[in-house]
Each structure stands twice: as structure tokens, then as C-alpha cells.
Image (cartoon, rainbow, N blue to C red; front, top):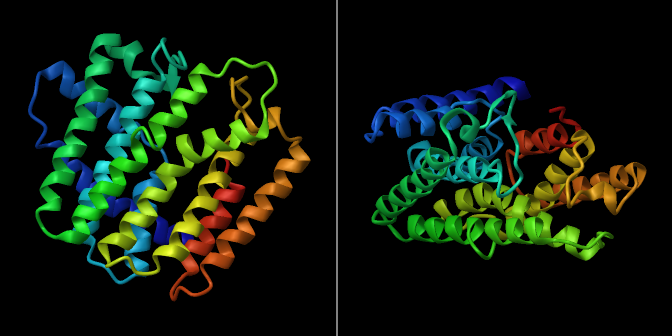
Amino acid sequence: MFNEKYNEYLKLFEDYLQKEIEKINCEKVLKESIIYSLTTGGKRIRPVLMIAVNDVLGGNEKDVLPFALALEMIHTYSLIHDDLPAMDNDDFRRGKPSNHKKFGEGVAILAGDSLLNIACEIAIKESFKGINQLKASEFLFYSSGIKGMINGQAIDITYQNDTLDEKTLLKVIENKTARLIIAPVVIASLLNGSKHYEELYDFSKSLGFIFQFTDDLLDDKEENINSLKVYSKEELLKIIEEYKNNCLQSLTEIENNKFLIELTNYICKRKV
């Protein structure tokens, strides 16, 4: 049942994405670069999460889909730029050549810039519809900007100490990863008049930490900042369980929360 519902939300997003891709009008190589990274697959956790929370709150899918796309574009641009030699220097993304390996560094940078710009256009257009959309737009760029994702990335690439401390680790995770897990959940709440805002914020923050902790357990790369440099595997598994309990506790007052509970369990046990 969970897989069927997940795939239903996923199809809803993918159909919308394909429709919007057709509207992209720019130089051929730039468009190819943009579409290449937007369509390389992945679980689409963030748009699925936004659509699911909107559904739980009884919202209209037409209101949430533009924001789901804008968020996925921001996430995609961050991955393109992350892979560049000046940052993480990764040659592959999801088993395929990184954008800069396929199209060159210059085009990859412009593709990332374009995705962020399109996301801005989408959010601005939606903001004209009302205060809920305006609040959602503000939160989207707050989460992905210098008070969120970009700040986390800055700490990540400039951290030089040999011994990683817990405070720095948690600060990076909260900004670089958790902010883009909090964003889809809170945006769905804001689009529905801030319904269950506090509970959903707490839920998504814990979920964001779980997402990064499980990533670190599954990823064998020697990253500069990695949870396994602070915790043992056994400690990390216990911490994940604690955050999972926080997620489930935050959902107790929300009706129709079954999918969100199952999604939490899925992320805790996911394989990538």
C-alpha cells in the first residue's frame, strides 16, 4: 500500500515535470544540460513529501505542484554545483556522468544558475495568488539560501580541522540537508493556512537528520564531514531510532498520518 501511494505521488510529480520541461526555451546545449540533471531519476523524496503532506492536510494538488517543482529544481542545481571540481569534485551522479563531465564546467554552472532562476520565476508567479503562496515562497528561499542549504555547504567545504566535533556536524546537517527536508513539509503547511505548522516542522526536522544519518551509514566515501567521524555505527543506529520516535510523536495529532509514518520508516531503512 505504501509503495502504491508513493508511486501515485511520484507519477503526479513526474507528469507535471515533463509538462513544464517542454516550456524551457534557451540554447540547445543549455536546455540539454538542464534536462539531463532534472531527469536522472532518484526517489524524488522532497516533491513526494510536499505532495503527500498537502494531501494529508486536504490541500489542492494544483497549489502544491509548482512549489514541488521549484524545490526539486533548487535541489538539482545544488547537486550540479556540488559535483564541480571546486566543491566535491564528483565525476558521477546516480551512476551517470556528472553534469560537468558530460557538458563541461561552464555549461554545468549555467545549468545550475538556470534552475535556480526558473525556481525563482515559479515562486514569484505563485506569490501573486495570495498570502499563503507568498509565505511559501519566502520559506523556500530562506531554506535554500545563506540561512540554510548554502550556509551548510559553506561550512562543509571550508572545514579544515582534523577532528570533527558534534556541534559542527549537527550544524552542517541541519543546514545542508535538513533544511531541504523541512522545506517541502512546511511549505505544504503554509499553503494550507499553516495547518499543523509546529507539529510538521518538528516532524520534518527530525526526518532531515534521519535522512543524512542514513546517508552516512550507506555511503562509504571519505567525506570531510561525516557522522561516522563523530559516532560509531552502533551509536548512529540508536540516534536514528531516537529521531524516528521524535517523528512519530510529532505526527500523533495529525489525522490521516499513515503514509507519513510509513515514509519515516522507509527513510530509516532505505537503501541507496
